[in-house]
Image 1 (cartoon, helix red, strand yellow):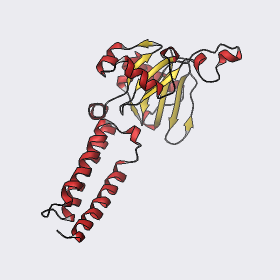
Image 2: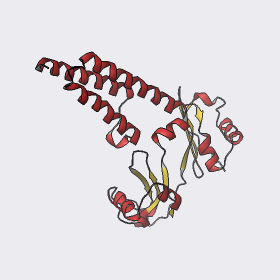
Image 3: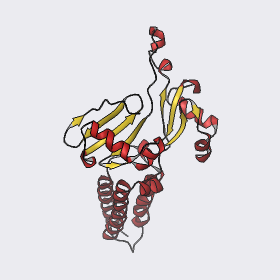
Image 4: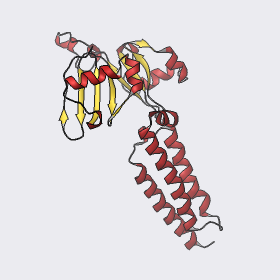
Length: 235
């Protein structure tokens, strides 16, 4: 094998990797799910194994990367269209703490010890669990949290006022489709959702890009063609 062959394979491999990466969309390292991480390693392995193999040409590298990329592209499309596929392959966020209460089953399910949890919180600048009102473990392994209002930076407590804590928000409609799992979790029905959306002036679910709801603030709705914020206080 000549240096020219190795160089050409590297060029072909780099182009293939760039094309596949662009095809699958932009993601930061913190947004990668375990599935994303695995397919990235395999894609790199395809290039690595082919560089010094005389029987593998640059076109073979392109072919292998193309097949792998098309399979991943298909999986991404299916994951976007079907929630079950997305949850199966990429996982879903887990609520570890809700309203200050530990969700023990979720902690055990994710094999998290308390010290691990504390370490993750310290990385977010939180050094006591008493500050945490809600805590999520994201599919990529990072945590998202919301502090109690009086414990947040520049606390209302310092200003002598006592604001109320907001309720959790729930994503009911995602890109024109009802998130039935979340709806069921909150204890709401499709009929209730249709009725509330109609009060807000929305009759066609498919025109809604994003619709979240909270007990305290009601609906926040964004459509494909225009933006509108609902302020209904749902029960």
